[in-house]
Image (cartoon, rainbow, N blue to C red; front, top):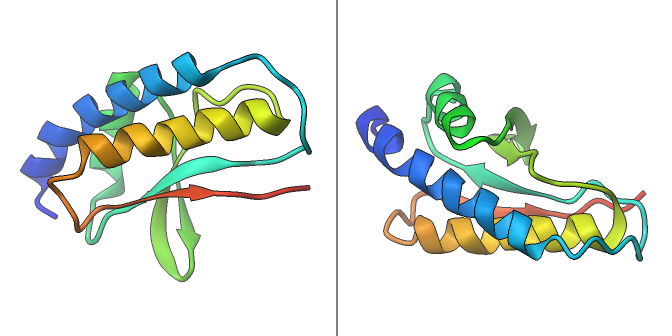
Length: 115
């Protein structure tokens, strides 16, 4: 994906995702301990561009490998554990899918991990 496109669309998408996650924070602590998070798969994306867009929107992105491909995990705002974190991660995913719907080459997913 072209750098100019990412620089234009990601700050807006990350800002919407942050707002959706905060709105989904019901402060519940039920459920199991987990590490749920939203992640993006962006072909040929420069990690530096993605991270700068995230910082500008007030979120943190962790670059990692997932299924032998580069993945960008959105790490905050995700508070607590259990259902609270799951709800926030799912809201982030939903908001990013909506914000990036015109870019089908960007995969938006929720990573679920239960301890």
